[in-house]
Length: 411
Image (cartoon, rainbow, N blue to C red; front, side, top):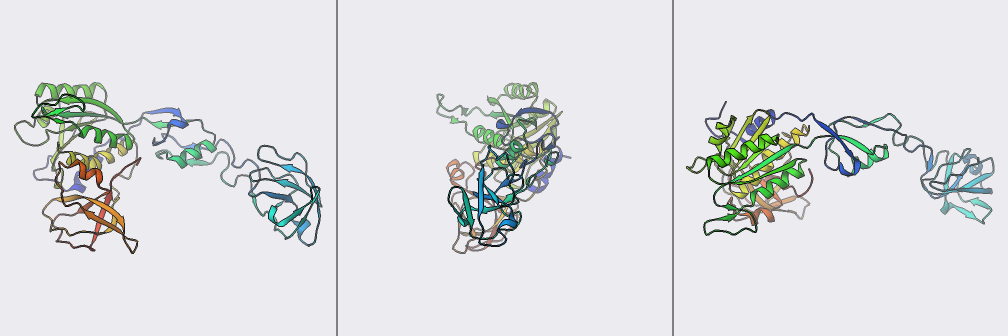
């Protein structure tokens, strides 16, 4: 049902995510290219880690019983280094020089740290006793062959990639990246570097939205700029469908002015409208719908409105398409205000603010004096958004608040 009045932000986001259809297509890619990708299948270990018992310290591999009573003297019979283990066996009264990560020789059941041994080249005199198993990492301490260590749906960060490598996976099955087509609209827009007419501005929103799509794990399809012309906008929409985009994002033209043609063009091309107004500042005019398998998000034209709506709605949508289930999880954090705020009206507000650590270790969010939705410089300088619920009362410095950090890197 299309909304008669502006939707609350939480309800609007829930509708966007409920309409998302998780991508099932997968591809196999080299491990080194998998950062930020989502696993399409469970990964099990192809080997045991460590494959054999290894030393956790530089020292001497020996039998704990041989140093149970001191003084003692042990014969030095060889050396075990990482990648070059000792081939023999340690008998009573013997020891082997061993280095961190080296295999523990047969017969040895403890490692004496080198700081606690006096060595003369052929023997050692232990200076302390050691319990059985001391400083030995047992075979399979980390994992064993066949263990399921990474589940389907896992987003691969640096640690997960290292684990996959240790499991001996050179290639990984991952979900295909969501294809997100971006169409900017407006006669006033020209690309950066182009000749700018007296009534024109440089198109900037697309770069921010494309950046958030990539950081969230999506693939960008740049449809360029369509002027305020019904046919040009229709052409852009058709190009998105031909490219089999999972999401079409339009920029601008989502309001109700005479030159705001996007909603009408989308309807003519077959969009099933979900909603198009939300009780949010910045970003009230936002279109959501579906066109077959393709989700539609029509973002406002004001730069800050587009960016905030991209963070609140588009990023969770892209992640949901990748299989993530955390789209409706509250990611806000507790903070205190570093400046005053007047009482809020009926819309949920997202105020651009700086963020610092206060004297008592708490987060302090200070709103910028200027909050106009056209101010790119302000949002570029901001570290967070202060979230103010509808009808929030006047607040003073030191009062509690909730903040959402502005993403600067992979999610």
